[in-house]
Image 1 (cartoon, rainbow, N blue to C red):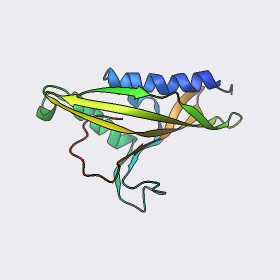
Image 2 (image 1 turned 90 degrees about the vertical axis):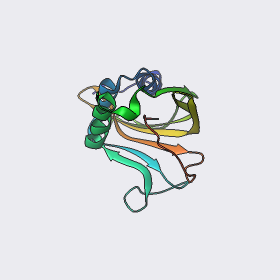
Image 3 (image 1 turned 135 degrees about the vertical axis):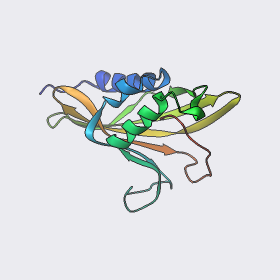
Image 4 (image 1 turned 180 degrees about the horizontal axis):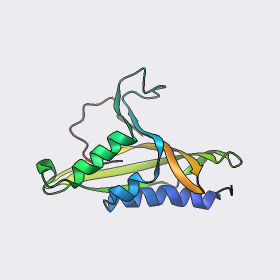
Length: 160
């Protein structure tokens, strides 16, 4: 197993955000390991998604269902489709166990989601727990901590 460089890890995070902004959701979904989770905590510093209520805590199957829904011709709530834009600070590598192929990166972001005349801005931090599988980086956990995670939200239609 060859270890990934810092530059490759950082490029992975940027490429993931670009896939989302370009609505390449099927390709984005392939970045996740089969045991992956996408987690958006409900409270600041929330320690566990299973013992506390979260805004989102989805495994790969649920992510796939959301991706299929977004692509559906009868998804009337997405006609016209929502669009997004990620503005990322350079990711920082929080942990790198190169021998085991496990990495953790943290990225501050501003995220805009828009549809018709509505535009919503979110700010927070994304934590990517990455693993090496068959020589490729895969997301085992993507945790999205919003600055105002305990606020009341309307629908968040896309992925941050």
